[in-house]
Image 1: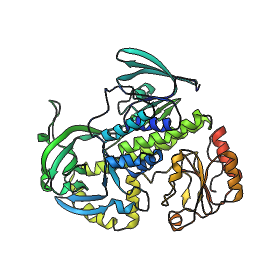
Image 2: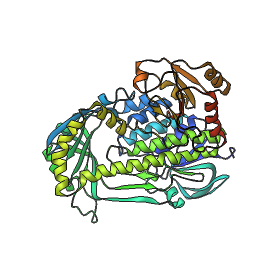
Image 3: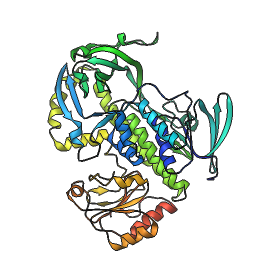
Image 4: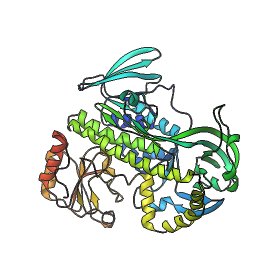
Length: 510
């Protein structure tokens, strides 16, 4: 099967498909990536890039390139009725959690340009104006029919990855449900040059009477991305313009727009596919889940999907793991997708709900409650972990087992200040914080699995790690197995289970 023309065929060259292609290529997997558009996007679209994905980019060695192309967003302001209700330092809350204690404003068009350049440097070109017409799936792999400039061709591949957006052809041909609904409002997004309080390089969100408004900083003095609601407008007769937008909130916040660089309107959906994997076919990004723009999670979640799937495909294709390893992609990512949609739906419904009670809560209760909550350091850390996606964990996964200290199987490896460098190997490894037993060293040497030993120090203790414990680390930086007392037999059994056939954990509660 590995002698096929390509090992993974990727449909869609947005950030999700590009990251999947780049991770696979860096790990030696042959890919083809196709897209029906003539070229990459030229508008900013998604803008917020969170810490967890910068950690993934660090594993690829491209984090500094992303940082150079963006700007830091470390402060958040909440407004009500034209007055600032609270200010929160997002960056300060994340300093002990991630090497990237901020959100990066790195627009999607620049993101795609970076990823395409990295792919091309690795010898992979995006095949443009190429559309998936149909495909068939069998135990031997995929037969995909593609169309390019009217020329139809058939491609054989081991696996097919649908990264082709909310209107995914891959998902529609799978005939899986895309459960959810639409929000009543129409929303606008505008990249503008402006003056006023929102042009200070920080994020500003306003709670008003059923109005959703948020302002993101953009690169360049006075450049801001505005997102808000368009109320009581009929768009059936033509496209809306900036003149159609309600300027009530803008006026109350003293926003003076000088120039419109880009303007668009859209409807917001909240949906999640009933399956993320069917046979040799996978759904990633917007093809599997779409949700409200609250928190800027969409692009980040798709990239997380890509990383989760990439290393599993590599392990299976190279014969290092049983094919059942691929089932954990759906188990892990569909659970997070459902959780994300539920939480963003609640938040979005709250800020847009039209009723006297909702107005009262937004305008009088929340402005008093939020400052009180964020006086707590624990609440500030929780908020950072949630928004930055560094808090994602997979306790329900068949790959997750054991506990050592406060760290459990499925958790993201806690950052101690220097322990992420070894993750650039993109492979399984063992970590010990302290001194491992000699038999652990011998086992790693026999099986050619790296063992990285870090000194036991205050940073390791504060993150919840346990001295002399053994942590089996997955290629994506999540803990697979956590052992408080090193046991070679159980480490061996863990990897044999992945190799032979992955089932539910054999040794719970270590």
